[in-house]
Image (cartoon, rainbow, N blue to C red; front, side, top):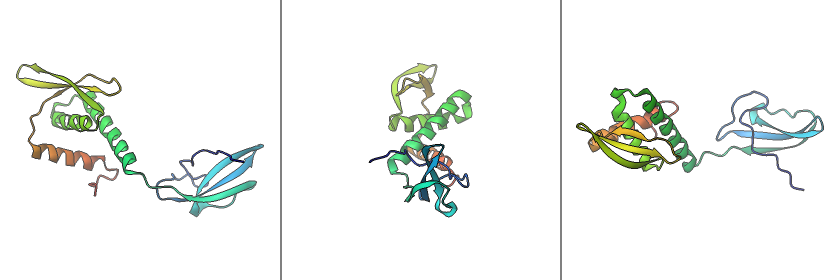
Length: 164
């Protein structure tokens, strides 16, 4: 017989600590109230619970490059939306670079341009119908764009350090 018990839990059943990439774990099928329930434990916190039907060891795989890129794109998207809501003129260059990065990652598409006085505006639409977003064309040099991209990448790291 083939049984399906779903993916592992996000936290250790014993300690409550989050389970993450690279963690060595133990899963156990336990009978509770006439049902089989899957419990997941960090290997260091494993103590076989009562009424265990079976158990197995596994290691949570590291995130793939595609998963990391998708996660990074979502973080950039959230940052872009926040800057759009805040409308801080001092952060227009950052918002411009974010828009270009999201365009490159196919999260935004360029829908046109328009001129307002002496200012050129780029009009973007989100690929899921979001927008339109008007972003002032900052006419940045390649060096300025690269510096802002590097700073954004550093800010997106969970611990604030640059990506290797």
